[in-house]
Length: 165
Ligand SMILES: [Fe+2]
Ligand SMILES: [Fe+2]
Image 1 (cartoon, rainbow, N blue to C red):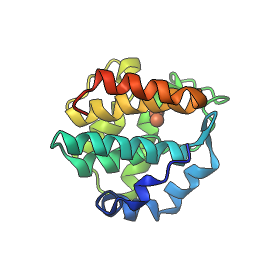
Image 2 (image 1 turned 90 degrees about the vertical axis):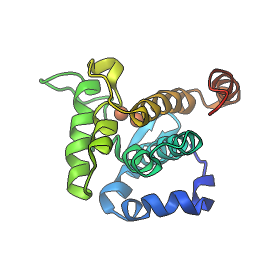
Image 3 (image 1 turned 180 degrees about the horizontal axis):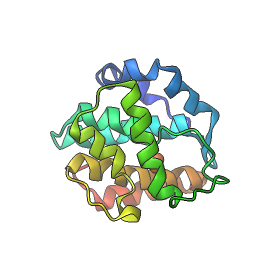
């Protein structure tokens, strides 16, 4: 993912600028997330796409942008790391939340967004619409980054199922 249009969106950048400055966030650039992107590219992309949807629906843009950016704040390669306590899908949102809490104060909504972004795999339902947005965009971005050349078609499909987004 090499999209950089978010850089020109001053309103968005103002919401996350302090986080993007942090070495703990920059470090995500060292990890491959999906075939075509780093974890930092993925996190910014999920954050920005979610932010745009939240804005159109007059939801909490700040919580969406910030928690979207921090939703995958973990530092291991998920493709070759095994856990005793549960699957990566279960563990990594909890690790990300713990890491995010060390970087910035988090509202209950921001915590919910980070913790529940894998809710389909973890059985705990999100409390907020913003949490569902980040979770859906995360799934979409994963496919998008994996598929690369097919993204145009996926985009058309997304626009069909979310006509107001
Ligand atoms: Fe994740
Ligand atoms: Fe993610």
